[in-house]
Length: 200
Length: 261
Image 1 (cartoon, rainbow over the protein chains, first blue to last red):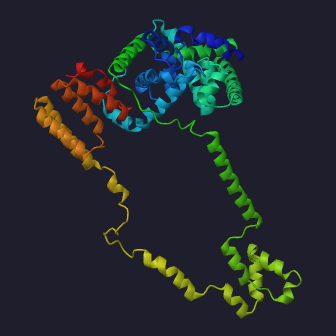
Image 2 (image 1 turned 180 degrees about the vertical axis):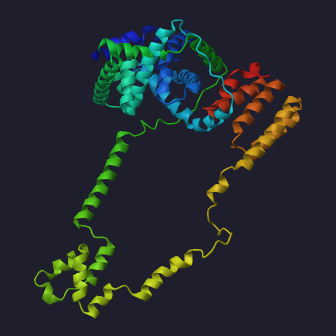
Image 3 (image 1 turned 90 degrees about the vertical axis):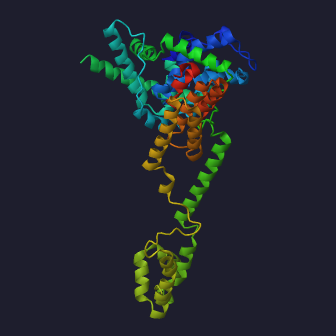
């Protein structure tokens, strides 16, 4: 499980040199676009993790990048771009979910059509297996305490390194390791139980 | 990490990967907003990181103080005024109290049996202070009785806060809001923009933060677009995003004046 710290970072796209924003400077248009494309998925998943309803996750993610564009001069390079983005995403989620209760009441009365995912795979069986596995992991994440869930998702799903996570969450590095260790232990148990269930 | 766990996590990741179309659409939308000078949300402070080490220290200090008082109270180090005033009311005869009489007096209130025992053996004159004085009891109850209303008068005393229910918009308020906005919508459909504007203004005056405040702003946006006041519509859109960050109407407004009928 140690590979979650370094190996996965590379796999998930550690801040590439092209994306490095010079601290305190204005962001170049091309750099911003690349920053957007690289981190959009990360921010969107973070939004869902913060409890932002999927119906407004896209809006919330856009909001993060508008704020990023406005505040990019505040990025001081002390942490990575992803850790900085995560901090902004957290505050955007907090701000947006403030009015969510009221909106959700209305949404029930409004006819909203869920957007269909345009990239549905043709191989339905494969898709089904993948979704089932994803649902299982989702259920596991739900079962974790919020603090453990956040660390586990950032390290083992998003591939952030522990120091990045510590910076993003504003907690001690040892706290990150401790939460991660506990969450991973639980995940191992969860996977074993699932496998034995699957094998009858 | 073994193969199973890696596969599971990969499945989760890919299931939550946004489609390329969404990324492109969002980028377009974000760039349009930035170009229009939209500053985006005004962020609320992050409550999770608001607990700084200094705050933690203050909280810890408060907790320790409370703990200290609690322990002190439990050990009898600190005696509240009620305990202190009750102690002199119980007097054991000196003969029975013996050498340790003072200690027994002090401990007496903690043991109900001891209190009963002391009362049974004390003389009437000694017992008197411990007995509740009927006159005093009536006096102490009187103010409470006088304060409590004997029956509802239907009038609210001066300075008393309004009942909470009165502040909550009831169904009639919502119906009124709907009626008003319905009039505005009808005027908008008929091209009677002056009437529509005055109706929406009236709604804003009467129900500034009403249940249908978002709908009013969406209608106003439509009106501005219909009038060709694009700049004002853009400004309204920006305000709307900040004021109603989680609104389901944001998708509609995102289209701008081009998306208006």
